[in-house]
Image 1 (cartoon, one colour):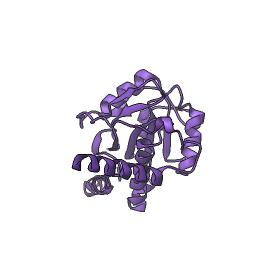
Image 2 (cartoon, helix red, strand yellow):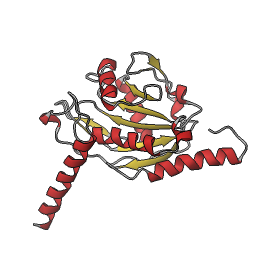
Image 3 (cartoon, one colour):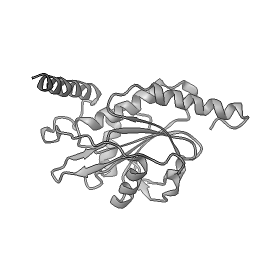
Length: 218
């Protein structure tokens, strides 16, 4: 009986967090997407740069993009699918919470990347609508569409596991990752609605370490 009660409470909490994080848009209200099975994230290599992938992506504006364009500044990155109405809106909101929590001097340099692992549905046009729903800075936020093989490779490097359920839904890991200016993983938040302090503190430390060494901010 106690286990049942805890399960119900957990489901209620997730629903409440999701409702608060989801913009009032056409992306909400899909009952078929109301079920999400989280998958534990894999371990990652903190010494390897994601900028070595060399894949070609497209932004929500439809333009070409390569991850090495992020070099020189820190980046927050997470992976979602656009028709999700449970975990994914919370992940995007978590990235937005981090963005808003960092000092202004860091925020101006911080980049945020949201990558879809549903390229068949999440076209650049649809991702543009999704980005507009969240009212984020289009100069610093990129929503990326890519080739399935490149998406799988990026997910592996980020330790993100995902599975296409064949009905328009995906089971996946819930991870928000901080990359340094060289594209290396510095910090990860696994789970939903996690405290932003670990990533914010890691960003401040990155900046302070470089400045103390007489280097450029990043």
